[in-house]
Image (cartoon, rainbow, N blue to C red):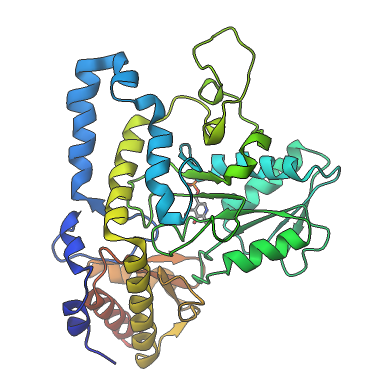
Length: 383
Ligand SMILES: Cc1ncc(COP(=O)(O)O)c(C=O)c1O
C-alpha cells in the first residue's frame, strides 16, 4: 500500500484545499453530511448583504436578477450531473422537491391505481414522502422493495446508499424500471458533486438532490430538481405558487404553469441560500467532476485497504460498486467511538446503531486525513 503522504504529493486536486476554510488541526471526515466552507462563499454572501440588498433593495430582484437565481444556479449545476441547460432548478429542500417530483411521476404514468416502489432501507425522508403521498392520494399504494418491479408505476430510490455508499447503475436501473412501466425518481443527494453522473445520457426522467454535502453549498442550502426536457410540457407539480406561474406579475390570472423547468418553482426563493450554494457549486464546476470522481475512488480504495490492514470491518464495496464519497465501518460501539474520535479533533459521523461513516470529500480530504482517522480508530478499538 502506498504511503499517504506520497499519495497527497501526487494529488492534482490538492491545491483546491486552499479554496476552503479548513480549521487547523481538524481532521474533518463528514463532508458527506455537511461540506466545508469555500473561501469564496463569505465574499459572495457579503456582496448581497452589504451591496445589493441595502442599496438596491426591492429593485435587486430585477437589477441583480434574483428572480431567476434558481434557474441560473440550476444551469451552473447542470453539467456536474450531466444535465442539459434548462433542466435543473435549485430551490426548496430535497424533501419538498421529492414531494413535487413523486407527484409528477405518478401523474406521468396515468395509472388509476399507482404503485410506488421504495426500498425499506431508503433514506427516511424519501420513505416518509412516499407514505405521506399515499395518505393524501388514496388510490396510491406503496410497496417495499425494488427487486421485482412488475406492476410498479413509480420507483423512488437513491443513486448512492447513505449507509453503505453502494452506487447503483443509473442507466441500467432507469431502463429496468421503464421496461416494467415505471418512472424513476432518483435521489442524488449522496452522488452530486462526487460521482460523475450523466443524467441526459442515462435517459433519466426525474431527479432531486441536495447541495450541502459534496457541493459545499452551506447548511440548509437549497436542493435541486431535474426534469428531462422532453417531459417539461407534461409536468404538473402539486405546489402552485406565483414563482411557477407563467406571468408572475399578472396578479389576477388563474394559475398557468410557466414553460420549462421554472414550473417547478413555488414561492420566493432564498437569495442568501442560493448565493452560498452557487459559490459551492462553482468550486466543483471549476475543479471538474471527472477529476473529483477519480480522486473519490482513489480515497475510498486507500481507506478500504488501510481498514482491512487495521482489521476494521467495512460494509462498503470498492468503487465502482460504491461512490467513493464515504466508507462505512461497522462496530457495536459506534456511538462512543465517534465521540472519542471527536475528542481527538477527528470528525466522522454515525448511523445508529453500529455504523461509522468516514466521509471522503475529494476537494478537502487528504490521504493523510484518512490515515490519521483510521489509525486512531483502530487504536481506540484495541485500547
Ligand atoms: C438520500 C438523502 N435524501 C434526502 C436528504 C435530506 O433531505 P433535506 O435536504 O430535505 O433535508 C438526505 C440528507 O442527508 C439524504 O441523505
